[in-house]
Length: 342
Image (cartoon, rainbow, N blue to C red; front, side):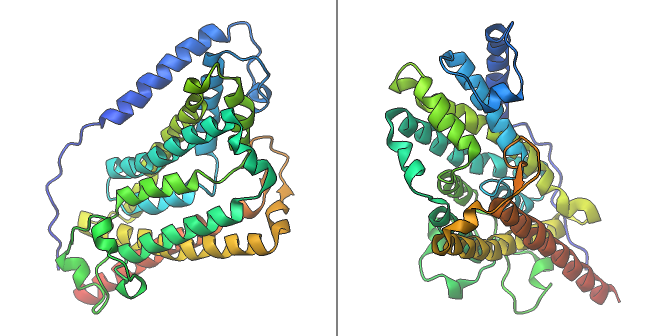
């Protein structure tokens, strides 16, 4: 049975890409002027000195954000992968990366504000990784159950909350008889994920919260380190979102087929990945020492400097569950096509 594909339309670049590009160019030009004659290297970025100007602070924050988004981080990659792979176009994948990063950016701006007024000191006293992992895991699990249409797991009006719009295709409805059709990816849930995941704390958050934020001139400027850090992360997440969205196209499937496999993969990654997040979070609460176990790699860049719980989470959720679900979905699809044509 052949699937009818919607006519292809040329998509315009969204305005937010242009806004980010302009912001980056402006900051880059100001930075060239600000840092002329200064030895500007990796050590300077990861260990910022005191008495920095506001331009220096936001520039370093932006660079740190780009580094954060480009390296495998458990607070960004699993979520971006899950939502982006459910899209069948580069632009939709970029929107998924933008949606998650928008929530993340807002939270980081709030975090550096708390850092300026001293309230973020709670991170120096308590390890919140475990609770954050559990909350993120629950949110992932709920979103995955929604996408996979596993109504027996949801006893709240989640469809209404996520703005459900039923989507059925003759192809996927017949792919596996008796199995519910996976739903469209709720990007508003990606924003919520960004707001939640941003409360996770690591080396990058330490720099912008405890070193850069306290140096801004006044409270009104306190959100800027977090804002520009979030924009830097957003740049890379939009890029990776576009790349992740095209993974399912490697087999040159039709739009309907790619849409089905992508949504199925997204649902499975969020559903089972959420369980993994919550489980590891519970283990860290029960055994805090687990969060401190890491094998050094000798690389000075955070997220690449060691292999620990964060690395395991990325590998399990993206590598094992995500890529594994994608391969399984494609195999199911090819088996169905062989059955129909054979």
